[in-house]
Length: 164
Image 1 (spheres, rainbow, N blue to C red):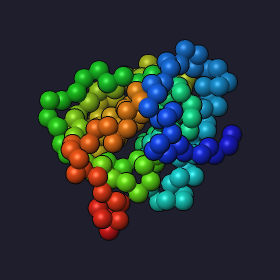
Image 2 (cartoon, rainbow, N blue to C red):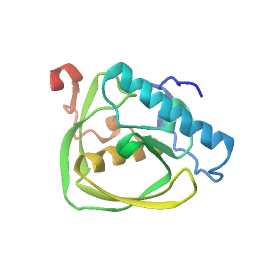
Image 3 (spheres, rainbow, N blue to C red):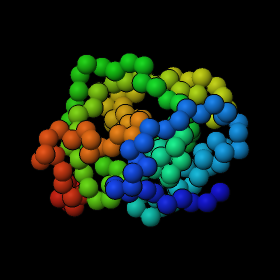
């Protein structure tokens, strides 16, 4: 499967909600998962970071996320089923917002229910940086970007200013 181009800020597809996946074993679903895995691996090789990618970022309007956390796996139709009241602030970055960092608030802990690429129902409880990561990726599936979650008008910075 090919490494796909990552859509960047300004592409209207990024703001479109994704469709539920109804046929997990369908070739299109499995192809999207492979494309996400290869695109994420390539991004990491070229940039030295990256832990997850959502299907809309490669132009596939399916509710699929691929993460390289814990060896790599796909989350199909993920849903946040619980979220802590406690929030934390952080500088969020995104493959679709090259070099732009956005200050956002996220839940400290969430539980995510999803189906894996074998059709098995799964549930994960995530905290801190993993909680933030999965909230960010699920937002992509709903057509929400980090820019939409900015705390205020001054919550934007270039990566070099934050990480430099």
